[in-house]
Image 1 (tube, one colour):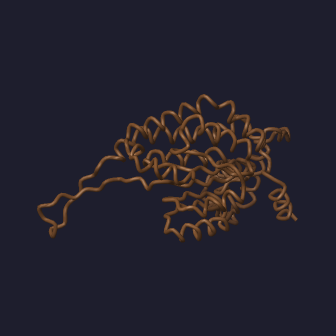
Image 2 (cartoon, rainbow, N blue to C red):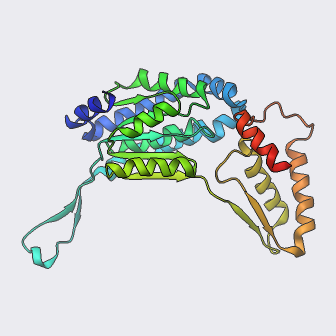
Image 3 (spheres, rainbow, N blue to C red):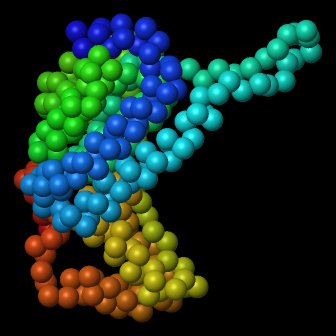
Length: 292
C-alpha cells in the first residue's frame, strides 16, 4: 500500500518540479535545526554518543550536504544541450535528468542519523519519492527520524518504516525503482538478489577492509594522531576506520610510541563516560573473541 501510494503520487509529476524539491530540502534542513536536542538525546540513549560527537559525525554532515544540494539542485536539474551525431543532422540533442521514481533507503546502525538523511537528501533533490528504513539496532534514533519525516512530509511522498528483519524482508519483496543500501556484505548480497528479480538499480555501500600505510617518510606524530582519531571515533564502529597498519620497519617502534602518546592524550584520565558504546551484546562478544 505504501509503495503503491507513492507510485501514484510520483505519477502526478509534483516531485519533478524543482521549487517543490527545494521546498522539501529547506523543510528538512529547518526540521533538523529545530529538533537538534531530540537528536542529541536519541544518540545518547542508543550509543552514549556525546553531543559533540553527534554533531560532528551526524548532524553537521547532513546539514552541510543539504546546504550544498540546495545550492546546486537547479543547475543539476537543467536540460543539458549536447552535440548531435551527423546521422541525425537537422535534429537537436539534449540530456534530461529524470528521477527514478520510488526509492528505498535502508540505513545501518553505526551512523544511524547521518546515513539515513544523506541518501534521502539525494533522493529528494533528484525528484523521487522515498521509503526510509532505519536500523532496528538504534530504536531511539529510528523513532526520532520517523517523527521528523512524518511531521514534515506526507507519507505518499516520503515515509519511514520502522522495525527489524521481517520489515526488511517485506520491503525487499516490493518493486522499487531504486534501492540505496548501506550495511554489511552479507545483507548487501541479499538486497542485490532481491533487486535483480525486478531489475531494480542499486547502490550498495558496504563494509570492507581499511589498511593504513605509514611510510618511513611520514610525519609520524601527525600520522599517529590521525590514525588514533579515526580508530576511536564512534568506538571504532566506522566502516572506513583504520583496520590494520602497514608500518615501515625503520619507524615501527617510534610510530608505536607516538600512537600510545596520542591515545593517552585523547583519554588523559581514563574517563570513557562520553565514549560511544558497542551497539549490542552480539558485537561486543565478537570483539572479545578477536581480543582472545
